[in-house]
Image (cartoon, rainbow, N blue to C red; front, side, top):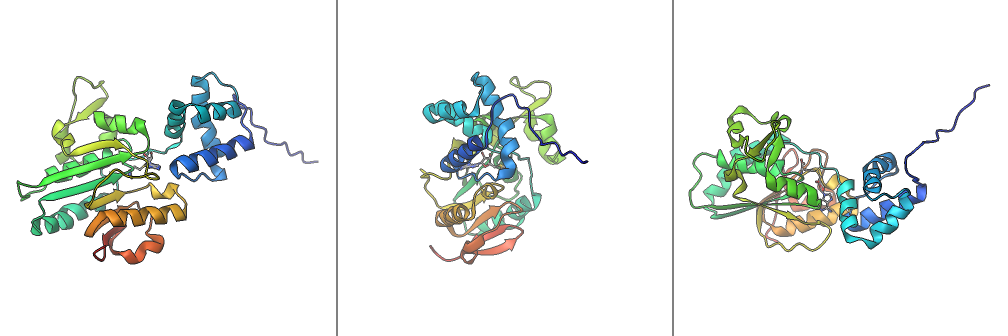
Length: 282
Ligand SMILES: C[S@@+](CC[C@H](N)C(=O)[O-])C[C@H]1O[C@@H](n2cnc3c(N)ncnc32)[C@H](O)[C@@H]1O
C-alpha cells in the first residue's frame, strides 16, 4: 500500500495560515503589494529574520508587535519588498533616451528637464540615467537636469545615497562607463563608489506610491519598471493615471518588460518595447 506522508514543515517559528492572511492584509494596506498564496514560504523566510532580531517565537505575536510599533512596521515593509535591479537593465530603454528622446528635448530648447525613477531600489536605475546624461554629446550647457529617485523601502534609499556597490554589480556596465566607479575610503576591497558627479542631479527620497506625493510636475520622463507587477490591476490603473497627470504632454513613461498600460492605453502612444508617450494636453 502506498503511504502518502503529509508534508509537515518543521519551522523555527510558529507560522499559521491565519498569520499569512494577516500579513497579506497588512502589506496590501500599507504598500499596495499584493501577495499570492504562492508567496507563503518566501514571506516566512523574509520575516523569520525579524522574529529572530526581536526574540519573538510566533508570527501571531510578531504581527501584534508590528501593529503597535512604527519602527517595526518599517522593518516589516522593508523585509517584504523585492529590490532586484541592476545597472543598464533593459538597455534598449536607455538607447531610446540617448538616441531619440534627449535630442528631441534639446531641439525644443527645454531648459528644465525633470526625470523620476519611481521604485528606484538601490539606485542602479537613476545612476544609469545619470551616466547616460553625462555621455550625451552636444547637450546645451544651460540645462537644469534633475532626477528624483524614490522608493518605499528606506534601506534601499539609504544604500542608493551612498552609491557604493559590490564590484560584481558592475558586470553589466560597459567599459566606457566604468570610469564613473572608484574605490574610495568607504569601500571594502570588493566595492566601488559612484563618482560624486553622477550623484549631483539625483535626489533620493523615501516615498510610498500609494500615498500623496509631495511632488510638483511636470516631468519629461517617469520610469517605473518592475514595480507595477507587485500591484493588482485596479492599483496599477490608478497609478498610471497619476503618472499621466504628472507628465508634460508628449512626456515619456517607461515600464518594465512584463508590464503594460492596461485600461490606460488610450492615454499614451507606444514608442517601442514598454516605452510610451503621453497623448493630449491634460
Ligand atoms: C524590483 S524593484 C525595481 C527596481 C528598478 N525599478 C528596476 O526595474 O530595476 C521594485 C521596487 O519597488 C518598490 N516598491 C514596492 N512597492 C512600492 C510602493 N508602494 N511605493 C514605492 N515603491 C515601492 C520596492 O521597494 C522595490 O525596490
